[in-house]
Amino acid sequence: NEGTLAQTLHFDLTCPAFLFVFSAMEIQVPPGASLTKEQRTEMAKGFEFLGLMAEGGRARKRKGLPLVVPKVEVPKLLRGCRRAPTAADLKELMSKVPNEGIQLEDFLSLYETAAEKPLLNEYQLFDALRTLDLTKTDTLEPKGLKEILHGFGDAVTFGEVEKILSGLPRDGLGRVKCKDIARKLIKGPSDIPHL
Image (tube, rainbow, N blue to C red; front, top):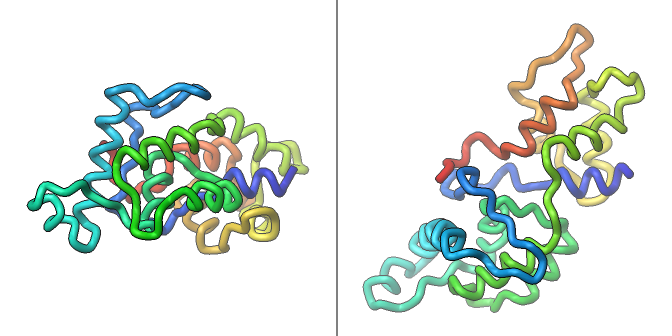
């Protein structure tokens, strides 16, 4: 289903480079389970960074007050933690975040809720992209991919698709391998530092 694929592929490629992608440790939470102590520690690092960068964050820390990540930054933090909720899922999650922002423990609970929806692995994403290839060569024409992702579900901008495709090798016909697209999407944006 093209709409589902567009929703699956949508993640914020424009988020600032200060976000963290936890690639050194797969942060998975089985349904109904909680984050482990190690996972909580790793996630707290990213949360603390954004909390300190927030207006008044350093002053709060000096006063011994808990850090707060502003509500507008919560979607970026979720994406930095390798969660890419659809617009509908994000709206539901954000309804649980107070207007003044979120503290660490509440964010970890929110993450556990977000983690109830499984992520695609590279093979599943490759398989979904292959269904769009009418030539059966496991490649896609960039212009066609842009139109599909821009026109269905949670529309991805043409600029975002360009970022996805940038640097990927093209064959003699200008097509890009589905495998390369899937690999790049699973790795996430290259300008985000890894922990």
